[in-house]
Image (cartoon, rainbow, N blue to C red; front, side, top):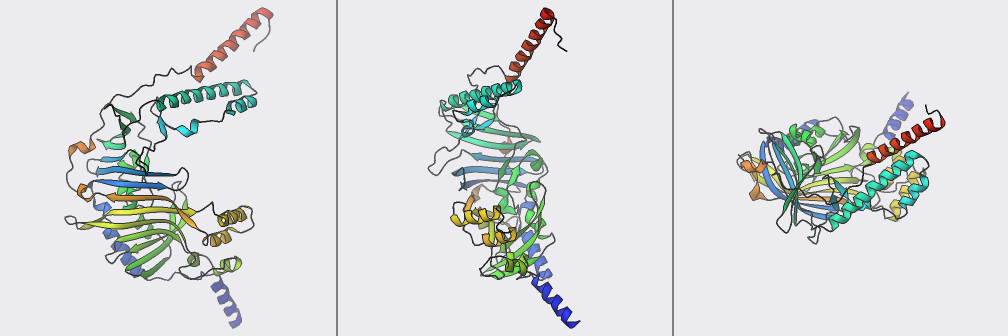
Length: 446
């Protein structure tokens, strides 16, 4: 019996992680309580500020935008404002490659540039009346969009653009305001159902980019804190200290945008006053995989509580402002980075190929990928102007004013007959021909 018991103990030890998380529940609860007390967002009912946002995208399409933004809300009045100014690249030039169509829709100018042989390929594949009609409509739409693009390219570019989302008296507005060098102003309105994702709330405890839509604003979901809900969900913890910071790691299940729950791990770094300094979305395989998984893989690196490691995202707050009358701190400077593999790297290409062709298992791919180089593919930088901050105080009434009904440019392009008219003409011609043959030759039609 003693031998069997020893064998069983060895077996279960072999199935446990190399660094199984062990933690003090009371200390975990103490840290969560202090994090919650320092999160100021839920205590802010009226807010307004101006801030600068820098967006850097290091994957296609590569771009560098600097935006001057403003945001504000009054929960009691159900008013909300978010605006961002003209996109600028690192040379301070307009970097907007999107075009506004006659109907106010936005199209990507690159998406309507096709190969000279595209129409020939479509015609080769057309073998039925339906295919011919479909091709005719597609060609007609494509030609019209090209005419719009040529027309817009010949127009003056606006010297100032502002994208604005506004909720005033429970009525949503979503529009682009433009100013031209001749002094002319123009507003182009879009559907309020179309939202925009912003990183602003990421620095206040919301773990993902918040989507500004009418429904989300109406329900005041921007005041909720994802990080507290996540920390209070079941799962293992790991507590550590490094320099002046306390580090709280937690693994639990979290819902994705599609509603599917997946296991994710976050590591929260706290300063001596228990304010959040950093939030890393990070994986430590040694805390979640069994020892047998390591032995079956070709992983040759160090295995301890901190290695291997795979960091996916990082939120870091570099500066706070103390709001004396409210007795809390508010983040005013920080950045949010998203990391991924450098797919131009030969090692990454080889490992990806081995995994896709089945030469290595998913677990082995996961472990070996921790040794591959990763790059910052997206970065958002936030800088709130402290003098512009208004917290829980009455705001000027003009902040949430709806946009004026400004003149909207009409394009002087005559649109060709629509596809529907073309189809009706074809059907009418077919019926007319059928009737002629019936009376002339006595053929049966139906």
